[in-house]
Amino acid sequence: MRITQRKLEKSFGENMMSHCLLKTTLAAAVFAAAAFTVSAANPFADVDDSSWAYQAVSQLSDQGVVDGYPDGTFRGDKNVSRYEMSQIIARLMAKENMLNASQKATVDKLAGEYADELKSLGVRVAELEKKTGHINTITELRVQDVLRYDNVYKDSKSKHDELSLRVRLNTIANVNDRTTVYSQLETYMSMNGKDVFQPNKYGYDSNGNRYERNGYGDGDFHMNRLWATYQFGPKQTDFTNRPFGPSKNLIGIGQFPVKMGVTGYTYDGQFKGIVAQFGDYVEGGHLTVAYGRATDINYDYTGPMVRGIPLLDSGSNKGLTSAILDAGKNNPKIQAMQKQLTDGVKASVTAGVKDWVAKQYASTGTMPSKAAISAYTAAYTEKATNAAITKAANMLAAQNGMYVKNGYYYPMGQDVTESWGEDEDVPVAYASYIYRKPQQWEFHAYGMTAVGPIGKICRAYGFAGAYYVTPQWHVQGEFVKNVRRLPLNNERPYSFNYGLHYGTADVLKAGSYELGLDYIYSQAGTYFGGSSNDIVDQYMGHVYKNWHGMKNVPAYIADVMEDKADGTYSPNKNYGGAKFFLAKASFVPMRGLQIEADYGFNAKDMGGRKMDNMFMLRATAYIK
Image (spheres, rainbow, N blue to C red):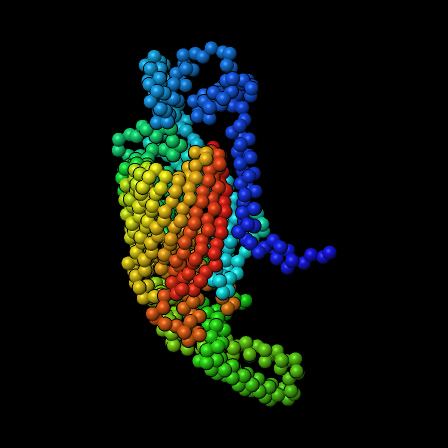
């Protein structure tokens, strides 16, 4: 029996959620199996699995207390020297915050007994670190399955399934006891042949044409982060049991991460620039100030705000004028304009060809051939059509109060214009104050402003917080206000989100989990182009991949143009933005492996237009 593609889609494609769940769960199972194999391996070659000492040795090895000998053996039958014993005690002292009261008392007694050896060891270790430093590496593997939308609205939705692998190679190098260098190499790989979304993947040339940046192709590595910090003030000595270096009083330079608020829904990406932090970011209060360029920007969404939208056609790409004429085909005013332009083109072509034939006959004494007349007619028709579209662009701009310059429409007005092909990273100044008591509560206050022309539409402040009502239940909330009045809806937009969560998923604690439900309300103009969540990113920053022949048009612009073309535009109607619920679940089946599932539902834009529900599943493994 011949099975058609339509039958296959009906059998297997009706429920995308179960489809995503099956594939990503399978990937997670592979991760889990690999991770289990690594952690279950015998840490010392000469300790038999059935030995009574195996569990004790494995536990000590996993905690980093006992390393064994260079040849991979434990040599349990060999007497331990006082120096070797002092090494074990030193490691236990470094993990003091992980020990219970009884264990701490034992370690204190041992430290007194081996004081001389510990002192000698401390000197020797310090000298070694000064010469060679210390390097930690963490490899992050993430498999993700998510729906990607060409059109997110339920009445015209268009989507595909994106299954991808992201690999991040993180290196933390403690150059000395004050200086640390961080780097992160990153690559994405498609696992089902679909293009993988990356915020920085595409750039635009001086004509506004899209191209793929070097280093962002499938399987290509690029440097996502590279920055160095210096710890100033009193020397910090309580960070030796963590791989990330000092946490107090830091200055840094390079490309570093910046996350706004508790969730990072509004922005979670990288800055290229400088940063200074006063206080401890782990616990207590700390003030951070940063200046640089925000790099993780959804440029398809933000670029047209200041770079403009072409009014005329270019090759196979439609311009805004043609798109509006097509969108308004049911509007009598647009129909009348279309007829006027079409009749004008026909009359111009008829007169132009007739005049050309007459001139040819007068100069040669013979009539041009049919082929010559046909070729001239086609060329003249194209020329007349382009002139008609240019005329239509001027008419539409005048009717709708659009600011037009050099053939581009600028939706944010004449004060917010830049040329295509310039540096696409946005200059930003940022400051935040955070006070944190881990697993109890935290409070954030922050402000940011874009620098240059974009600063005229982007200057915001926000507050965020989380509070643990019980050790398991916690609530969180955020508020962001853009103080710039935007022409889009003639308002100073704001956004907020709040949620209730149970449990805490800690990738270092096997069996930990978290369940949560958030409500997100985001007016157009408070999404800054790079969210921590792919579902949030698509709802708040939706881009039409094809709108009446135009490629990659932000919904907040297209929807306004659509209503103006239809004659249904109202200045009292809000456009763009999103309001929706986001259900989240996260589980750590084993140390170093986290599985997450997110579901966005009951989503609408600010005008009440319904968006499709979204599902995302991911599994992330951390290998150290």
